[in-house]
Length: 224
Image (cartoon, rainbow, N blue to C red; front, top):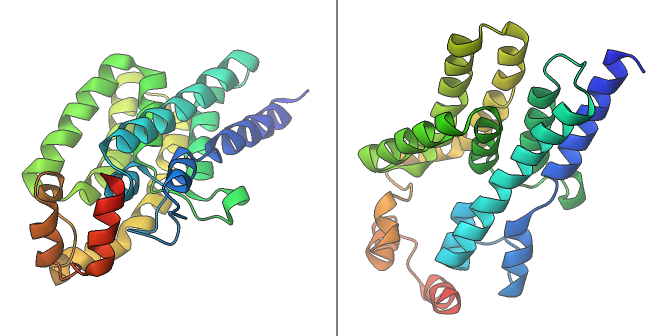
């Protein structure tokens, strides 16, 4: 089997693993199709908005785990393929964001990006996690974390490894991540993007962005 064929298999493995959506399944436990409720994204943040904090942690952990496994499985199966892990991990992020089994309507890639970082180096995962938390609370917008990390991580990876091919592969998700977050950038400009204060003051934040109504009250009642 040629390296090109094995690389294609890595893409397929990673993409299919990425299609697993814990947010979608957890949303169903509350009667939601999360593609149509809240922010409309199948990720940990929307799981928190609609289902609650436990759903947030479960979704984030599983989205991290699936990208971690995609990297490790591909790396283990095809050790002769340059950047097999990077290919599998990147494909998993794309599969998470554009899952074929959910009509290409997925998440925004942050947690799965974290899983790729964890698969590379656990210490860098915790360093990046710390930076992400500081960025989210420092700017007051969680939506700025994924686009920033999608560029910072490949830069740090290249700085530590000088592996250009792996770096270029790891840069690929930054394009769809920025595309997925474009609407958030517009909302920040318009003053209607949700801030991190939603975590401890849901009603006040929803009222600030003029999204407080009977439906949001009913959603919050269901998530508690």
